[in-house]
Image (tube, rainbow, N blue to C red):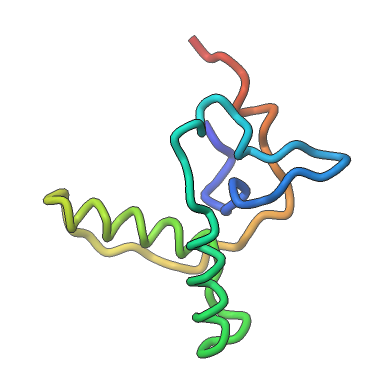
Length: 94
């Protein structure tokens, strides 16, 4: 289980830390650039207000609803992480 919904998945690898994007469990996730594009556009209208974590959560919620899944309200206010949790993701919890 990931520590929290904090967009740590979007962090790129550094010399000190490998990105969660390289985790086996995240193999099918692609096109992170779209979150950055959405974030940049929202920043123009609402500076320092919208987090990438909220963009991911709301996109998943709305995408599920568009495909016939449940519709529900979701609170916003998540903060973007500065830390990757790759080690936690790669632990086999079977």
